[in-house]
Each structure stands twice: as structure tokens, then as C-alpha cells.
Amino acid sequence: MAILVELRVVPVGTKTTSLSGYVAKVIELIKSRGYNYFLSPMGTSIEVKTFDDIAKLLEDIANMLRSEGVQRIVIDIAIDARFDKDAHLESKIRSVEEKLAR
Image: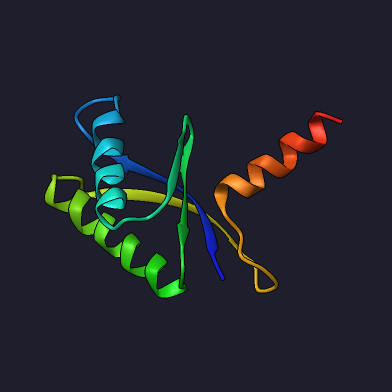
């Protein structure tokens, strides 16, 4: 089973309107855990194996941003958990692209 997670982390109350530096730090954390991920303009999709992985990742992101001086964060999350077969980010994209090609 793979769990697909769409994650958007928004630091609130920073000294700048640019958030790309914070996003880069979040991506570095995701990469350091060895998760397969896909960065998009509005969020990041991640493959994890368990719900515990998600909880630990969210906690680590919050702690890292707090250590960067962020006093508040907003997190939007969508979870796609398939129990009938393994799901992967690439296979979901490929499935839609194949249908578009028909």
C-alpha cells in the first residue's frame, strides 16, 4: 500500500511575502527522508507508506519551521490511501495522460 499526500504548508507572519525559501527547506526535509515527491506551483505531492509517516513528517516540518522563527503555519493536506493496489504519483499522472491521448 502506498499513501499519496498532497501537502501545502504556508508560513504565516513572516517578514517577507516570498515563501520559496521556506518551501525549499520543507522540500529538503522531505528529500532527506527518502520520500518520492513531486513539486508543483501550489503544493507538493508525496508518497509515504503509513499514516504514521505522515504524522511524523508534519511534526518535523512544524518543528523545522519553528526553528526558523516561524510563529504560525497553515497546513492543507489531502490524502489518497488505496488498499486495493499500490498507487504511485507517476502512475496517477500516466493514467490521466493516457486517457487524454485517446
